[in-house]
Length: 105
Image (cartoon, rainbow, N blue to C red; front, side):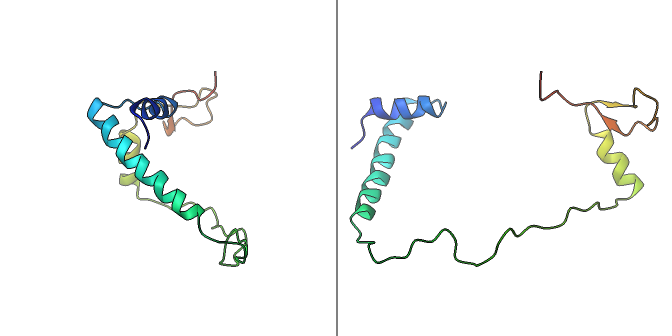
């Protein structure tokens, strides 16, 4: 059985805040999960073939594509963006560019 201290440590690692009631509940639930995993460890798997997948499919993906939308839908989508700008180099003066927060500093 996990202790409250162990649950607090797990929550800290996961960056999850838990109330005292949630910590008590997680103590029981996580202990139950770990007990079940312990039972699975008891299974004899010596004669079981190792597999990573069973479908036989390799690198299945779909083609990228552009779908057209009506002018009204296009304008509605752009109108719901927080900041709409034109291209600073003058190549796109239609206002179809969106300014978003930077990902990199």
